[in-house]
Image 1 (cartoon, protein in one colour):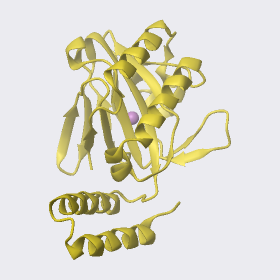
Image 2 (tube, rainbow, N blue to C red):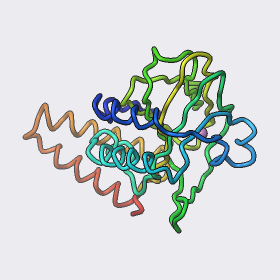
Image 3 (cartoon, rainbow, N blue to C red):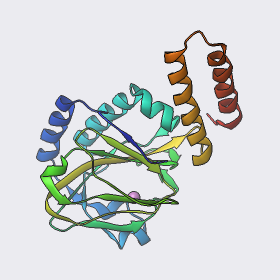
Image 4 (spheres, protein in one colour):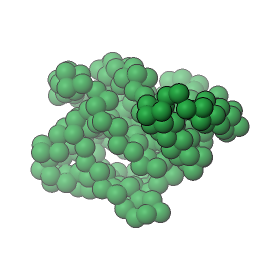
Length: 226
Ligand code: NI
């Protein structure tokens, strides 16, 4: 499932991060790529231990915890500390799949990448190109979102970033290990959750609200690893 999550960050938070990002020194993005994706990756990143990156990462993680749509869709077990990248001057990232397992640098912690996330900091009008293109069984989806908005997609998908021919594309990117590792099962949980929420708004006294909520939790009990 490909899902847009609007307004993860407020415009004030975006503006604050933009100031930090503009003052930061960027390095070659190949530092976090494997040998295969390293051949097609051409962008810049903040170093993983960059203090401004850590500060903004914590801000993003706190915002995600307060975001009901993200929590319902991702059912997160662990979230990788957010990283930051920048594409300009024709830079792009060719077709690749993200590594299945990622070590959190400087720690013994590893996460399995079930979901990939991109959070946009630059507005679509600030740069040409730079679409994130995600392939799934329905075809290729091209994504370019307003600042503060996030796209969530299964890490099993092939994806690429089209060349940025003018301006600069600045984003945060990170991965989520979900309590429900299978995308199909996780999508069912999300669809059921959304349907229960609609029903409980429109017919709060209906006994099916409790019945379906029980089904939701019993499916989660069956499928979740915590
Ligand atoms: Ni990727």
